[in-house]
Amino acid sequence: QKEVEQDPGPLSVPEGAIVSLNCTYSNSAFQYFMWYRQYSRKGPELLMYTYSSGNKEDGRFTAQVDKSSKYISLFIRDSQPSDSATYLCAMTRAGGTSYGKLTFGQGTILTVHP
Amino acid sequence: NAGVTQTPKFRVLKTGQSMTLLCAQDMNHEYMYWYRQDPGMGLRLIHYSVGEGTTAKGEVPDGYNVSRLKKQNFLLGLESAAPSQTSVYFCASSPTGGLEKLFFGSGTQLSVL
Image (cartoon, rainbow over all chains, first blue to last red):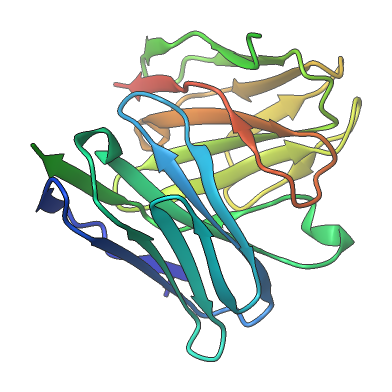
């Protein structure tokens, strides 16, 4: 069983829709949670970053973490065609020996139609 | 700013051939990483480096070697390529290996026939 599970989709929505992307994980040591966005033929770019449980909002994007359920989500409001990309969740445990090593989900392919 | 640059962008190898992928960063970052990305598997860490002259194994190190002779460069070598190493390879760097974001290159698409 993978440490991090993410539904690969693909997910196709009309412009303006609310998108919900999710990951579950099994390692309770994970403390830091991230969402990366990857456009076709490009490297991933950090989109959102949260620590432990709670919500974080940045413009049209909201990241949620529920550590009790080992479940994280990314919500995109008023989705735009430019949001079409692969979204990867990533997480790491606290402490000096983490060395910035991330464990990634499989990625969800999102297409937003005009 | 170039950021993280990977060369080559594409490569086709025959089984048993060797090659080296080069990663260069111009941000003076201490930490560098090599990941591979396969369909349905996400990004998996191959090797990483916490500073010039250091290397360490990641999640899937078998069949790969790395070197970090200069702070700005991180090389990934395949000594005897196998079809299972067909993948997209990404290099990344971060300032201190703490919880800052990783900066990724654009990737190298490698096919082993």
